[in-house]
Amino acid sequence: MLKVEYLYWLVGAFLLACAYFNLCDRRGSMAAFWAIVALPFVFGDAVLAAVRAGTDWPAQAIGIGVLALGVLAARNRLQHRPDSAATSAARAAASLRFGNRLFVPALAIPALTLVLYFGSRKAAEYGVNVLDPKAQTLTALGIASLIALALGLRTTRASAAVAVGEGRRLLDSLGWAVLLPMVLATLGGVFAATGVGDAIAALTAMAIPVDNRVACLAAFALGMVLFTVVMGNAFAAFPVMMAGIGLPLLVLRHGADPAILGAIGMLTGYCGTLLTPMAANFNIVPAVLLELPSQYGVIRAQVGTALVLMLANFALMLGLVFR
Amino acid sequence: MPPAADVNYWPLLGVAVVIAGFALRRNPVLVVVSAGVVSGFASGKPFAELLTLIGRTFVENRLLLLLLLTFPVIGLLERFGLRERARAWISGIRGLTVAHFLITYLGLRQILSMVGLTQVAGHVQTVRPLVAPMSEAAAERSVQPPPKADADGSVDAAVDAAMDPAASVDPVPAEPAPPRLDERQRAEVRAMAAATDNVGLFFGEDVFIAFGAVLLIQGFYASNGIELEPLTIALWALPTAIIAFCVHSLRLWLMQRRLRRECAARRIVEGADAQG
Image (cartoon, each protein chain N blue to C red):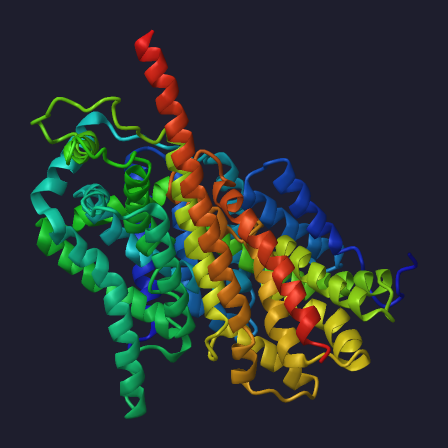
């Protein structure tokens, strides 16, 4: 079976290569940044195994690394290095030379992800596990991009070193933004372990009139949105709002339909995801990737859709859950 | 508000750090790391235990960066002109508007997510290399004035010449010169391309029964003694999915209409300037 760990090692190798390139360019703090990010990919399994065995120091070392990443991120400002006229001209020329053949490796990524995903599910029916069942689509995506890379190298006749160098250019232009989703997920874990959710649920439950079912529903919907905005993730908001308001007040006291409340309540939280910089991989990373003038450009483009959908979800719940 | 005796409210300081940090525009990574530390101290955890917690959760979430494997191939193709090619290809399709293009992408993304294929598209995989440059090219084409009846084809020729700087044979440009989007408008179109990807993903994936959210909802109820079929939960995500498609499509169409108006207004101003 192709374990997801093998792909982690590849990510680790790529990050170390990027660190090395930056070191050669005398950009020490950027090099240190990528080298620390590489640690969980190179040693991840060993660290988790050690924690399970009761040895905490490797995880603590990574924890110190995370604190260092925060400091290094603040020192490494995002910098856009606009293309020189020569590079743009070379790109335009190459684009004319290769034409539509450039699309083949690019479209191979989604197409192969599909094929690998369904192929491995079919194979699993016959008892053969090809992809790691822990992360099927992502493993499929990883392998698809490696095959696409081979295709791209064949089309362009470039060397693998050029590809790694270009990958590093992309990674450096994203900078700390690329790490944000991972530290946010970590924060989610810390918040859960320190009881932030319980505290918020207790506060909301104190603030609403429990006998009015519309008020309860409004508090639930608004709470889902606001808590998602703070946490950056509707998954974190759901259990908190459900335990605080949804289950005790709406389902048990006012007889709301649990399936509808759960499904649409979660989607109400997603409207919050469209609004928050905390959902970095959806809102901040693409703003940097697309070289928008403002980090909040994508959020601004989403506000209209998010607010209308929030009201629509509330109206749907109001009409459907108390049947 | 009297705090309940058994709930510790101090960890909420971490939330305050997040809000203050983002409001003051500090570096987001630093803000998030500090919030974790503050929340950990406020809950009374010893520092060593807090470090273990941070390190362990960080490692456990490394799946989120598996996406980095796409970087070498995307970077390579970009260096050889993928984005320029995507733009040129879309500009070659007559009659394709940015609203049509992005609405099609929205529908496709929702349907793919509904069958569980959330990783097939995304900001790194498809939006940056393909969808964003294609949207810009389509928007460029959408703001052109309709061709005049007497000038059959000459407007299109001028448009193509304006869009393809490599085309050296330049017929006498029809006037006024075809409008181009300015930097702000191009950024707006790119932002909308990213927004469309998000809306398509979020309001499609919940209809897939094996998706984490559906299982999370089912698991929550199950642990509280309410048994539900995942399919029932997934089906109730459909109404919102349809509304999301309609609302966002309407907004895409409105954006296109506004871009057209802005460009038309600018053309009039520029025409007046040219005449003195």
